[in-house]
Image (cartoon, rainbow, N blue to C red; front, top):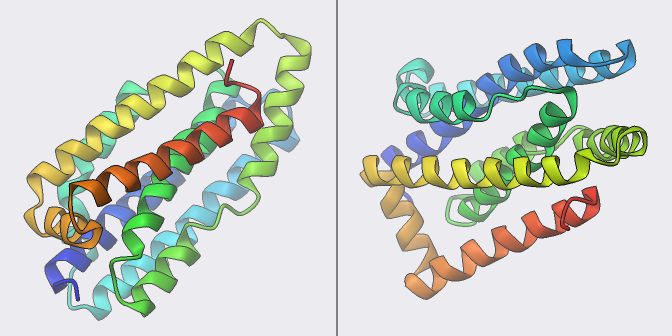
Length: 214
């Protein structure tokens, strides 16, 4: 069973991810070319805030101050967002789908290493709330109008993944309890390799679905 420190770290990282997603989606919604897109992305932001509240409540049940639990993860997540600030509406949509989707895949893998109540909570807060359908529709519409964006969005997607992996490595290196949870849960280096492969394969499928794998 994971230690309480490991659970607090895991839930603290996820809670700040949800809180920052709320901020980012609300801000990116302003780039929408139409009001329906803006409304839908704003609704996604509200959905993320609801997830944050669930995680904050669980941290409190564990005897942790949610703000204190989230603090170690502020810098790496803000660094990631500062390096991947979208400059267009479609970049924001792709980030919400591809970047956040890969992070969700990683958390789902780690959720297999924790107790059932925590696993169920993680699965609940990682539900996408229609994000995939929204992204597919917006990207398809954007590429129909301007097919030349395909290559740039594919490069953008790869950048998102590279920056996300870099920040995860920094977090794991700095948080001993979280690293122990990850290593012990995977079992050995081969287990870690298989986990990374599964996450990468899901990312590739996501790219293919968006039509950005060329």
